[in-house]
Length: 475
Image (cartoon, rainbow, N blue to C red; front, side, top):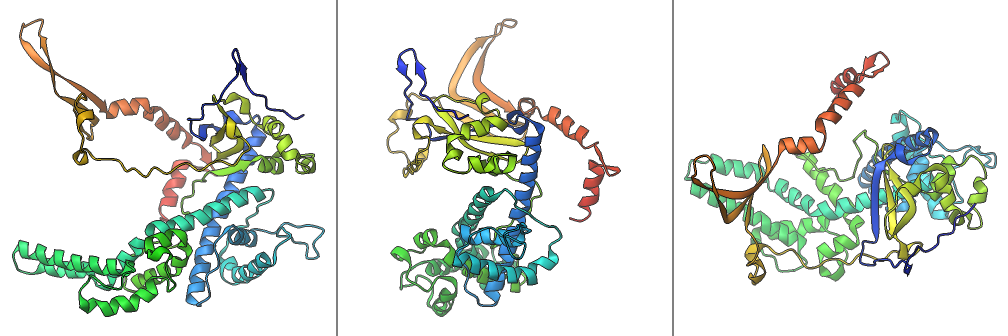
């Protein structure tokens, strides 16, 4: 029943893997071509929808809980997989089991920290979130998928803080010093335009120095002395009070992003109180279109196997028979790539499917980290040595609406003699990529026709276009 992988043997012996190739490759195709039966596709579609709804409610619950902690001056919880998974188990319908005295089971056994998290979150959920929840969620047979989704949510929060904290500081300073109104007042003065521009530039320069002083660990400030009292007072509220790693805020932000979450909420609370637009501190998923979820061997066994589930999940049988498990439900042998093998995990949104493949020499091994390229791209006006460009042709590129790309070769004209008139004309080498070409290559009209035909499908007495029109009234 198991399948043992054997090295490929060609005419000249064992095939050697090209180690210069990327570690991971991804093959994308339609899900219906990958599954062996409609029941498997139906199970996956249902699981994708469940996962999508779980992520939506988890993110909304987390935002509400973080704001509650800030307002009540409660220490923020440590945002990790354990915390996010606890939230999911709280907001989803508990599974019933005969072994539990209460007839309910959230999973387990739990550590003391996890149980404390669940108790705290359950109390908050019952009071503040459950009354407004219109649907029941469940995660039956989705334990491994929930772990992946929890990791994604943790990454969402970390990336949002790392990438946007500086923008929050700038927004806070601009609103605190009423930048927009001050500039409008200067523009409305009856003075020369040059004088207006000078005043605006001077004001913006002052604000820039204030922002730099807030973000700097230097004790000597570069801004005007009249702002120093304000900087000292508000720096305590906007920057962690502890010693920053390497005395560098930017470095510390990348190492400990969650220490800045409360500061970001504080800044946006103030901006909101002034009637200005705010940034969304906590990531949310507002799109109704289901997103990709990962499905690994554990998920396949839990979701699709109807018998012998325990057998495949014990004594290393999951790894031993993983090829058999995947072949039972999917056409994994239809999609092959030289030097790569299937990594026993796919990502799908119920329509498309991405198969992850790993280089053969790294299968079942810890994947090495890709080296970071520290050398930035050089701009042509920054080059010091132009010798490599001497034999290259200079091409000017003009993007546009009709011609998406219009390229003309500079200083390379060809003389052509007109057969009819006998006159000599100059011809320039050029290349055009037009809207019509793109429309043809992407088969836009064909797929647009498919979409319009699908919208004629009647559901509960109305076609899709009529339902969309009705829903648009609620936007």
